[in-house]
Length: 412
Image 1 (cartoon, rainbow, N blue to C red):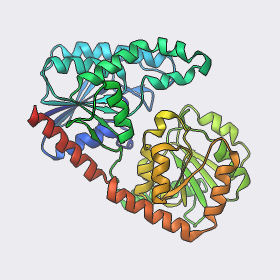
Image 2 (image 1 turned 180 degrees about the horizontal axis):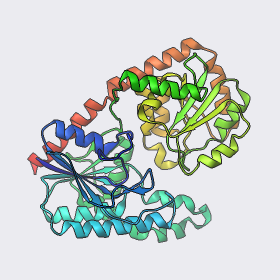
Image 3 (image 1 turned 120 degrees about the horizontal axis):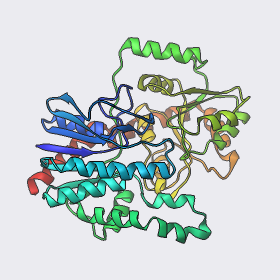
Image 4 (image 1 turned 60 degrees about the vertical axis):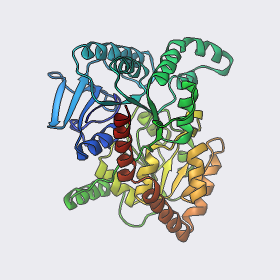
């Protein structure tokens, strides 16, 4: 079976940096392992590194059964702004040009957003009678309304009308919708104006655990040692991820000022300098910058509690963040500031604590209480690991997703 995967904002196998695999890489690897031919369609512009992947070619052959297709676009400096919207429009137009000479696949898996590329490819595939599974990860274009004050939200809705129309048309035209949670799936189905059907499915955004050599682990450990992040049973609270506007670090910095444990805020992104300035002079905060996968794993092993300090936004409440699965796979308690599905997961399974961003004392008080109880930390850690193995194992999730795509092709 020949399968196309369109996902423009994630790492791919040909990237030089060893990035954390996300949906496109995980699904393509599972499909190839099952004996299928896969083409990943992605942007030549790397969303994370903010540079172009290649100046010389648009097609890469990873193996006989896996190819990478790069779609050109100008790129953008910030994740928020008109530059990104222009880039996505150009990306869709260039995809449309590329499709003119293409032979259609047997089935397609389309990442959403971006809206524009999903809309273009869905139209083309529907005309070719190819079954389509749309993978929804973010509530675009509704999240664009965040930048509009409540008094002029109605103007924002007018501004995003073209995107809303493209979104609804795309949702109605695909054969099935895939989402990370039932709540996100229902959001997609509501916008498609239909009930759940056979081809709709839920697939959490989990990833496989990577295997590292002993040399890699030792090297990562020495690097963390050089930053004062020792393997010495220190009471350590850590965050690993992209430092962007989705997060609120004010409660984290306040907690660091009022507790004696070490805080590690690891990652890079547009908020790095601002967080660095906010935490200036606070000696128990360490900001090591971007971490490799191996360094992330070793840091997690050296931490007692992991943080997910997200803003409690409506679309976040429908989903479970990627980092939850990373933290659970390493058997770590999670302290998070989002309610909804993720908050319920924490409280129902006793794998951490939920705090509020509106009360600066909230996180500090919970950390003080839990860090004083080693038995409780051990219990939460055990629960976290067991929950991951039972419900979010990458092997299970992606085996089911491969089976689902085969079923769609056979039914079609």
